[in-house]
View 1 (cartoon, rainbow, N blue to C red):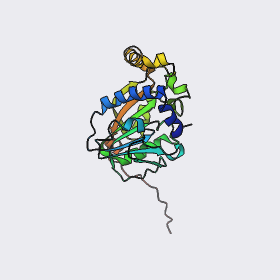
View 2 (view 1 turned 90 degrees about the horizontal axis):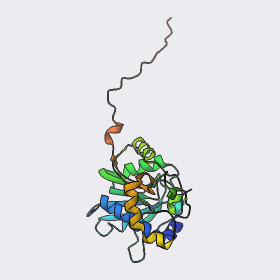
View 3 (view 1 turned 90 degrees about the vertical axis):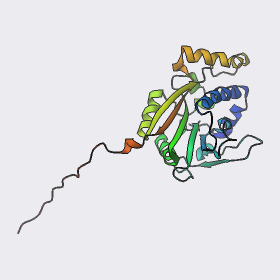
View 4 (view 1 turned 45 degrees about the horizontal axis):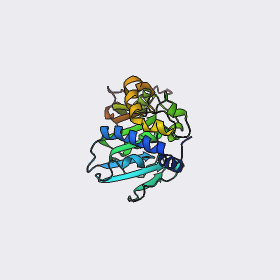
Length: 237
């Protein structure tokens, strides 16, 4: 079951949530350092991360699935948020240059339908960035955080799902090697956990980050398909 946005907002207001957002923002910004003048959509509960690019983009929208409730921008920022059914996004085809999904895919009622909608609203040269709980990490099983709700994925499972939805992964990254606990001393050493985990145990990252593009050729037949022969019975007089 997906975590609702109010509960996610409460998590990000805690010391643990702030440390989590800081670690993830570092990895996301390394992948997308500049989105000036671009159209950006954040789906799920992406507000803590969209602030990385909001001021420079032409348009930046935070959308939460209807079953999770409506999300709001942090205080002091213009409210550019909405809610909609995940398989009926209220945007025209080819609307966005970039789409960021955080706390969205794992809680989707139908992940393939959601991805097909994202494919529809993403421009042909656009990029999709997915942050999903790693199936091998304790983060995926601790329900006190948003990462412990919904369906976690292994990197292979996510790759298969994206390929089936006509996306191709271009880059992968990982984050959240910090154990999913709230002890103050542990949170203070978050940077050390992150550095050590990336070097010594990359398979146990709390989340996997995948950047994908449209695989437009995946839907094109590799050869001409000949029409099927039909047997027609006729009665002779």
